[in-house]
Image 1 (cartoon, rainbow, N blue to C red):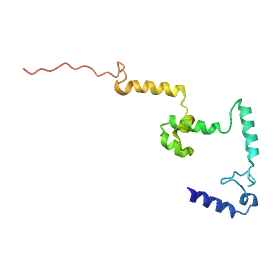
Image 2 (cartoon, rainbow, N blue to C red; image 1 turned 45 degrees about the horizontal axis):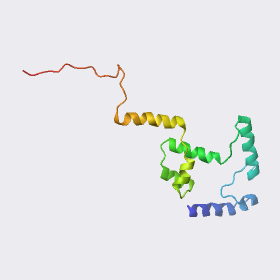
Image 3 (cartoon, rainbow, N blue to C red; image 1 turned 90 degrees about the horizontal axis):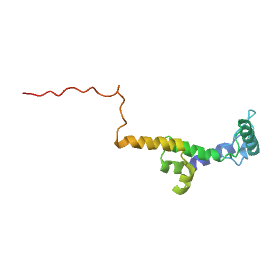
Image 4 (spheres, one colour; image 1 turned 90 degrees about the vertical axis):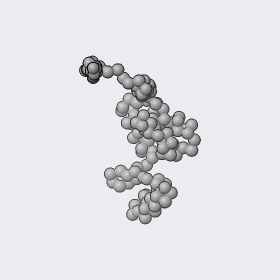
Length: 135
């Protein structure tokens, strides 16, 4: 990983655009003219989008929590999530991986069918065949 990041930094330092060469970012974002988008501009744009969407009390960092929650609810592994997020302590990862109440309810319902099969509808039930006896 360190090698890849170092290679990326080397690519940027040999770029023709001075702003790219001197950027503190490893993965800068560019506008349509090829200029680096300033972090302040990203924050302003993010705030404008939140306002237009009617979303209050939401920070950019909350997207990290949202990713972690959806990752876990789609079958992700806590150990892998800790690696993705760069956490050394599982307690921190658990704070990120909040599960929605609907997801927890669905998982409870699923647990009820693990040892006891779900009830069958009349159309799913096998017709009983009379026992055949040999005489």
